[in-house]
Length: 343
Ligand code: GLA
Image 1: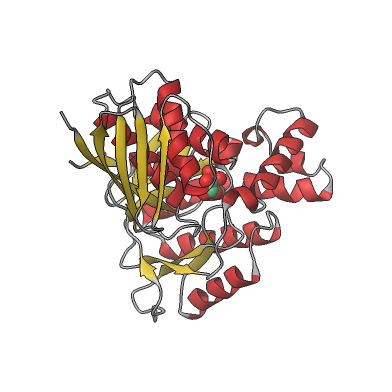
Image 2: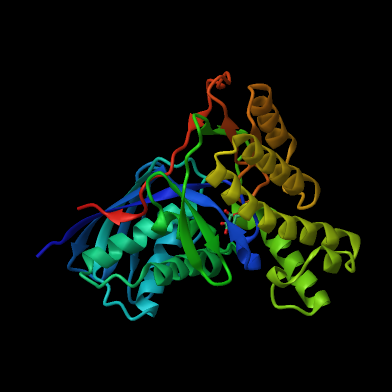
């Protein structure tokens, strides 16, 4: 019998809390309505046939002799490999992948792809879904071990736990995920493309992660969640800047949750601006194209604007009051539902 399944997983925006996830810190992301859809149908043969509709490319590989591959193919093979490694009796399948999240834009097209692939493969194999945290970890291993990007859990948790009208306060130490009402008092959140796209694995992302690990080693702690600004001052200049960003960004996340609960949009905008300044000056993940996009949003009247995601290009996020002159190419983002099997 042929089994059909359709899985959808959203990308994410992040209100605040950048480069904190792999430092066991805090973040306040939300799932967006754009995402990746995987249509699957089971095959009798033990192989995966995959078509990336938007790229016009195909891949086919046997499940019993999985080999690694580059680009989108690495994600498909990683999804199959991780599920097999977790003991799932995976059925052969033909997969059709299509998406609406811009790739390499800082809106987490990668996590949307991983999550949709894993959900579709589980469904077509009639396997029980593991709990969502376990799924997030599995998807993150696809990225870390099969694609080579040493990313944290921000994107996968956002995609899997997303809720309409809510952001998610995530504590990456306890892995507690708390929905926070995203009521913006008439303001809107928009993203604007800087025009510069990147692959996380080949940007400076892994280098930043290694710098944080070096700072931990120098301070004798297992994560930067355990340090304060006074500790940062004991480090050499470059590591001091990186740690200052992480420590102050964690504080800004809880300040943003408090500002939201008071409906204080001016303060939320100020925190978003401060996050951007810290990502630019201390974490050094901005670029001239990103600065230009942030400048356009600020000139349009944004209360706050900042880079989102790994950095080194991608989209910027702006908080616009009702009377702002929204740039034509800006796209409004609202919190939407998390990943799901839809058919
Ligand atoms: C990318 C990674 C995430 C996170 C952000 C920065 O999106 O995939 O894990 O580290 O960058 O906050």
